[in-house]
Length: 197
Image (cartoon, rainbow, N blue to C red; front, top):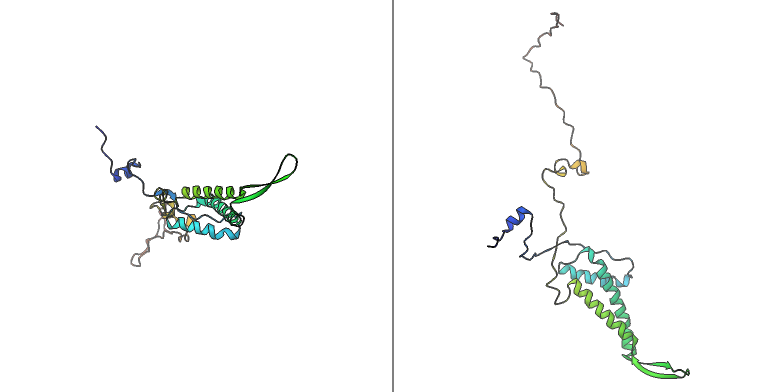
């Protein structure tokens, strides 16, 4: 007979994770990647636009910087070569020399067409990995919020925050003797030999 299914509370008590229930959130904390130094300032809007899309879907992490950077490079390459491809056309006439050195015109596909299609293919793959395509959008798990520094009750940070540089040091604790009441008269102190002081 199979084991009965554990409740969420039992999993929390034992520190285990349920294998039959899908996790709603990713364990990776949310973050915003820094703008890479090797990108031009003209590419900053593309980088920001892609980060904004990822942030709206709640899947942006600081570790996405390299994928977004590669996408921006491919976007730049695609944009430049696609503009020249439109000017030159998809078919170009190239001059080819035969074995005797005589030039012959030859119609071939534009060499920029391969650059543009490779950039498009790479951009689509990166968008798929980031979860920005129709098929991948449901697979991307939302990331958890930035972890808050919660103070654990009974910890050093809770009991003595001044040791960690948070807050001021408390006043020293001084034990004072109990006050002497005026009603009581002091009895003279006696010495061991029986004399008084």
